[in-house]
Length: 443
Image 1 (spheres, one colour):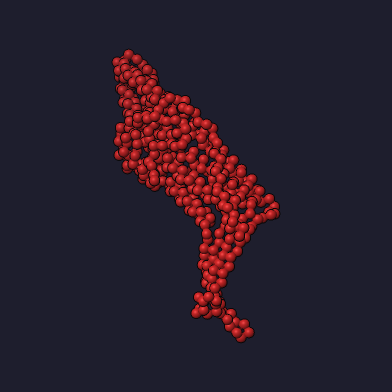
Image 2: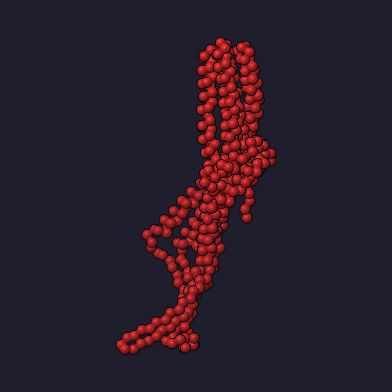
């Protein structure tokens, strides 16, 4: 009767997880970046979609979400009335006499959540399931971004490989000219050896670039759930033209970014789940009230089993209140408090990391664009100097050292420009990831 009259306390509202306040605006006054679809590259878009469908990490995150939701349902089911059925048949013989016993019945039980232990357990399970959903979103964002980064790095490495290969062809032609001039007595053997050494140094870059190219190809294939060499044919048919940089929409406010970032949401929900679990541990130190009952029929023969005389019924109320447990309940509360402190610290770290990600990539875009523009002008000047040095050397107006320096400068500037353009591409994608949006939505 006492348990039946006890009121059910609603789960308390968790204290808001505290974190460093975001700034009112980003330090770098630059717009944000669109995601990979803004590059206008169909192959890039297709690879991202394939990665979102087949990546093993995403499959694992989906399984974790399904497990968390099932666990939430298990906890919720424990708060409702439990009803079971049973049936048995016995035959006993003693002292030459035999007897039968037939029984069928229903058993019911219900635990009154007087102090909120069950309610807090359900709230913790719900928050954990929501955290798993946010983690799945964060994994999808990460996989899509990593696929885009791998593809753009592959494009950049391919461009650097083409630059080195063209430089090898140009330097080989220069070596032939020097050898002709040596045969004609217009150049020394030293010039020929310098030209040969320069050519071999440039050739030595090709294996390293080929390795980087294949490594990026393998990484891209694995991200899309394939064997490392499975994309060779498709990538070989990729357009040679460099994709255009996407436009730059507004980055938004820092507070909006924190709300969009799925990893920040997941960290906050994990802290919320830890808070509810702490409330559950506190409630478990108080009495637990249970009501149980049974209704059945018991008889010696099947024909009399359903009669009024065979009806058996019972009801019981129980209170469980551990008085001495050696401090185990108190220790469980202390352990969960430490877990809550750790989850709170993880949430604070997620907020700071998110803010840093955006600021770093805004700076990378601003400085990267300026660097590409300056290197573009330097590349034009280096190419013009190379052409001029080649013509003057063939006319005998400069020595070979001047031509050699011009070749090295042109190659270095062109390679640096290609790498800077690639970094600018990557900064666009990294900023899209840091802003927590612009990835394909999922119901």
